[in-house]
Image (cartoon, rainbow, N blue to C red; front, side, top):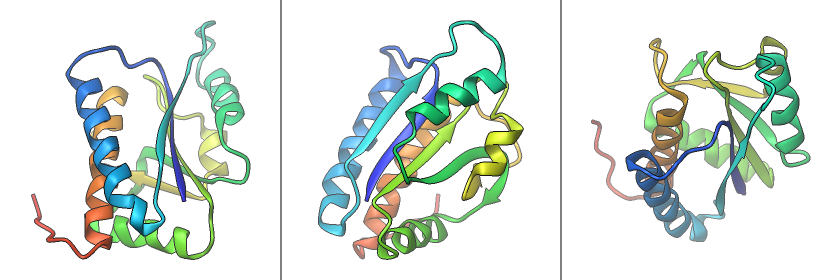
Length: 156
């Protein structure tokens, strides 16, 4: 199952980019034998600064056709890492070929796009910087692959 992280904004070189690349590389290695991956980041921009609705339009255009749509949103479901791993495994086992995680811009995800999502995940009730959410998601993808492969799981 191919994974896309579709996000508003460009992640420049720096510690977040280094961490993102590292965790996605780890995920690709760990997930390959499990039928997970590769993972890619698709960055979109609304250069007109026209708000969430305009961002939703460019996000929709970037989504792989037929992908499971999962938003990252503070209103989403808070999950443990094992539950997240199980969800990924369930989508894979159901024959889904593409999974797209959507991360909105500074103002979040357009309410209409949120209603179109198949699932929504929250990293807690706090709002996180959207650039950092990419890193947190990539780490959880890697952790999910290690859990699904039977590796040791340590709560942090």
